Amino acid sequence: MRGFSRYLLTLMTVFTLALGPVGPVFADQEDADEAVEDRLEKSRKEAAGERSERIKRDFLYKRTLEPTMTTIGPYNINVRVDGKAVYGFISFAIEADTIENRALIESYKPRVDEVVFPLAIEMYRSGRPGRDQFDVFRENALRDLGDVFGDRIQDIFVYQVL
Image (cartoon, rainbow, N blue to C red; front, side, top):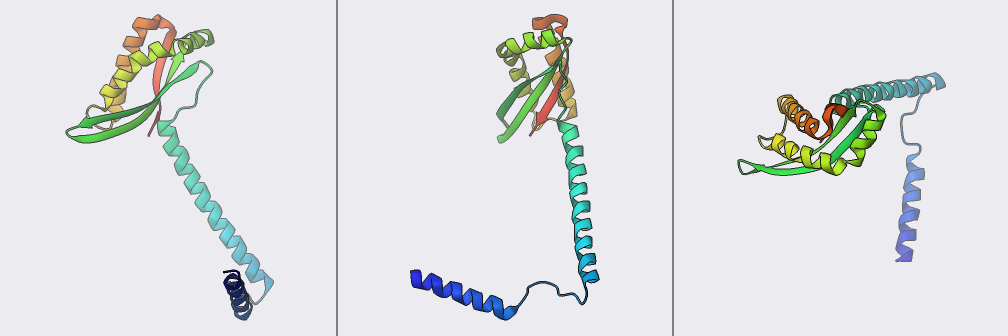
């Protein structure tokens, strides 16, 4: 087997040397520099376009956390709707009125999960949720969490949806 690999290596080396340089050959250095600059500019534009699209997409579904916010979840949700499986991965951000109340909410995360997780499952019962289902979820979650924490919770946001 060792002899065969040496044979292949030798054969590949001979073909590479016989073919010469691979790629465009330019008459002068200016043409080569222009071609490199064109390729770099094109790749920068493509990268900028992809990045701006990714930022726009992430802005719709992911919110930056403030110091008074804490995340809840993520939850994997698997339900059947009309015989079809609906899968979801969702997490939420709860905004407290002060940093101390945020720490209190974080210490009671299991209680928050008891309130929020059934509401999240209910949100997926009619299929993949949209803005209307998110709004209904938000109202219900604020009402139910208000019963537990009082006025310590300012708002709840959908932090991430996959």
